[in-house]
Length: 282
Image (tube, rainbow, N blue to C red):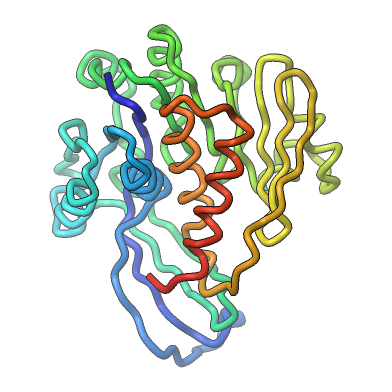
């Protein structure tokens, strides 16, 4: 059986280093740029595999050089890419991300082939992926695709994790299949309607769903199905870049849960791993 199945996005990120984000109508000199294989789904699959989980990926690229790079990156990390489809009519997903000297970043994403996955076709074509201990999802692909994955994984007894990034309206049918919801402060506010973390946790939590609210350098908060809240401090590190930190956390969390850790320990372990991740270049 697969430990962690990730259904999600693949983007080739063009990373630009600059002193800050440009203002409107401003041309700002940067200092360097490089390619980086990303997409929340791809990043989380790599993190899960590097954490020791037998990981498989379901997604789609274009028939272009970007797609070849993205598939090769997953395979190099030990991720099963046999269910990464190719859309001959649409380009691979990509993004341009500007990383500030202070370590924060902003990005523009063009989803491309990520948005043309056929939710009806994958029902049978990706059948192998539904036999997994943990199903990890995000919001960079259509909900209909994630709903197909969640429904089939649940049917086979999997734990379903949703990293609700980017935040968007989601159907009650889909949300009722989510066992663990992971959000950051921005996503928690958009989904709950409040920027108060206590109220956001209470609003997003249900007796059927755990909620994890990540807060960067302030750590994270876990609200269990039973309504018990635990706050975890962040690992004290010097920030180099926050780009991909949430994906590192989610992939590691999924791997630890697939290994049999309880949710509290998995949160603590994943938080520490993400802390080390943001303190190192590349």
